[in-house]
Length: 311
Image (tube, rainbow, N blue to C red):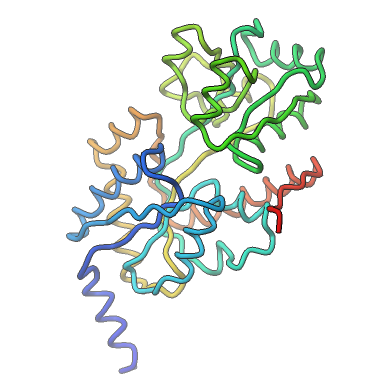
């Protein structure tokens, strides 16, 4: 019993210094902006700042591996998103497991992508687009943020459900994808945040959102389910820590982040940039990872996709 006292004391004193949050994306992107907003407020509630440490690269593997190897003392946390189970689905031989190597702290927020097309296609609905693409096999091209990215698998699932055959053009991120879609060099793409300004300017047509409900920033755009397609993609965000982190630290971190994301000022800022606040416990994050992993594996197997990185 005495041997447990130092650990309990450490957890009760936590945090005594700043907490580091590993983020697998570059500074300035939607996830970076969102997590800085939430983490600033969470740090105030902890009484210690939470410092965002950007570790982009290798589809998130660099950041996730750093989190796995970090000391389980509560002073290193990591940002997990939809890219985590997708990485596991693409790379079955990862040196870590998202359920056994991490403790999931909280599920914070999500946003829903949209299916957007170039106006020169002359389509106004998802049904119109499917009919257009079916009549022109391999003539329609779509962009993604890279091989095996979320929106690559979104379009792959759309193709499997509808029977369309389109040409995949992978880019290095959202900016390049959007740029070529606006220029008409590709005809379609699933985009992360509703490009309302481009829609209003007549440069893009939003056909559908991919979430379970209509998006509050684009209430007139139907969901894919409303369009008759059984497709939902939730681009979610959560917090995890290395396995072995003291329960007291996990609980305090969860309390701080869940309170922060529900703070009125934070919620308003997140909704302004297109996010939906979830504020659910770590168990919900763990279940969502398992559900998404099964779903992504099924899409990859049905399409016989070879997405493993080259040796």
